[in-house]
Image (cartoon, rainbow, N blue to C red; front, side):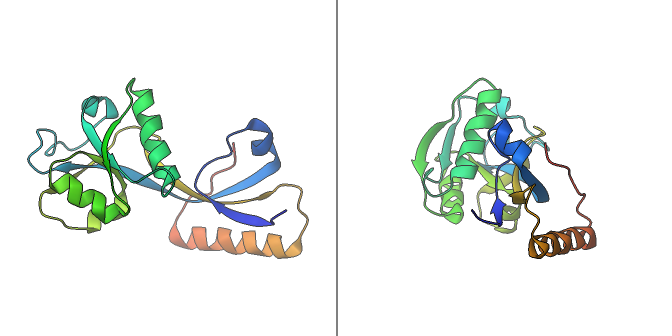
Length: 168
C-alpha cells in the first residue's frame, strides 16, 4: 500500500506492468572491470560472449541482487552461466579482486571514477547492459501529493536532460 517507490527493475509480471506507472530517472551503463594485463582490457567495447568461460567476481546476491541478477541475465543471453570465483561485500572490494587477477566484474559506470592500479574498464555493447533507476507508482492513484511528486521528478529529469520514457 505504498504510494511511490524507487525501483531498480521493471515489473517482472505483465499485470504489475499494467498497474504501475514507471518514470525512468536513469539508465546507468554497465562496464566490465578487467585486470589491466588481460588480453581484452584494451578493447574499446566488449560483448558478454567475449568473456564466456572467464572467471568472475561479484557481490553476494543478498547484498546486490540487481547487479548480480543483471550479470546472470547478460551471461544467459550470451549462452553461458558466469563462474563466480569469489564474492566481495563492496564494489571497491570487487575492484581489488579484479586487480589481483582473480576475475572480471560487472560494475556501474560510476565505478570508473575509482582509479585502481591494475584495473581497466571496458563498456559493454549489449543494449540492456545498464542499471535502471525509476519511480514507480500505481496508475490509478489519484493523490494530488503523488501527482506533485511525479511532476517534480519530471521537472528534475528535464533539467538534467534525461528523456522521459513511457512504461512498458
